[in-house]
Structure formats: C-alpha cells, structure tokens
Length: 104
Image (tube, rainbow, N blue to C red; front, side, top):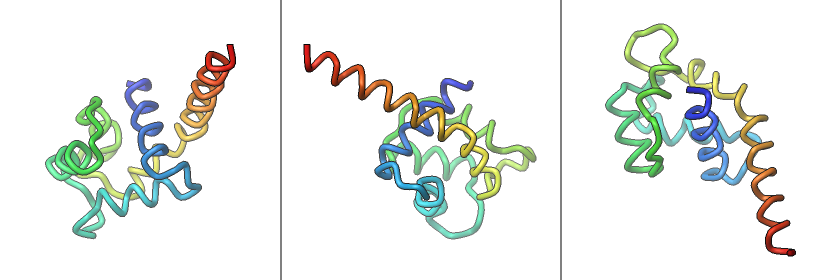
C-alpha cells in the first residue's frame, strides 16, 4: 500500500509542477463540486478520467477514508502530506539516474 500511495503522491506532484501547495491544488481539482468531500465514485471518476492516474485508486481512497464514511475530506486527503518528502526524494533520485545515463 505504501508504494501505491508514494506513486500517487509522486504523480500528483508531477501533475501540479511540484508546487509547494500541490495537495491543496489537487484537492481543488478533486473536489470539483466544492462539497468539501469526495465520494468513492467521484474519486474514481476524477482520478482516472480527469487526472489520468491508473494506479490503485481504490486502495488509496480506502486509506484516506479514515472514518470509514465512504467519503474523503480535505483533512483526510492531507494525510498524503507525509508522503511528499519521500515522493520528492524518489523523483530526484530518478532524475539523477536519468542524467547519469545520458552523460555516459
């Protein structure tokens, strides 16, 4: 599950150009109806169709739905923040490896 979360956070970071407010920006896209929460169906539709992330979306949703209400709130979504440093380090590592290969 951690790998799925790390992949999703890395994907989100790329989609929003590694901005410091990447999770808030992602939330504004995900919560398109501005209701303050996202249902599982909304999540699946927006994450796959609009953001075009094809990873383990249901696993990520279930992880974020801490209160098991069948929705994810902004507070729950912000739990992804703890994966941001890992995702950034992972992306920098991949970029450095690509640069090293290109130089050789």
